[in-house]
Image 1 (cartoon, rainbow, N blue to C red):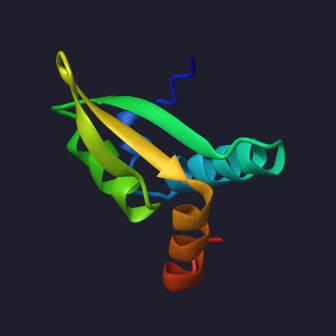
Image 2 (image 1 turned 120 degrees about the vertical axis):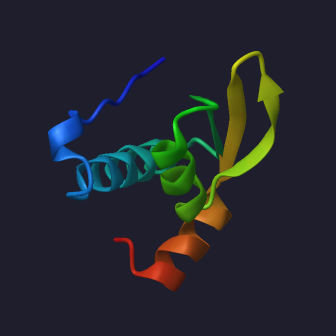
Length: 84
């Protein structure tokens, strides 16, 4: 389990985006085929970021949305949006 928190006054500078991309690349490089994350429903900025990177919401668990990311979806989004 991992929590990534960007301090409020630093949000919007790309730190969450860059950090999450690096984490995802490392996971796939090390053999993971799919990633999962639970994101609090009220964390709208996180939802936008996860969806931009190719995560798909597959359901809800209590007060969170359940996001999944397959390697091929991530690669497609990196190519389409120049997120690397």
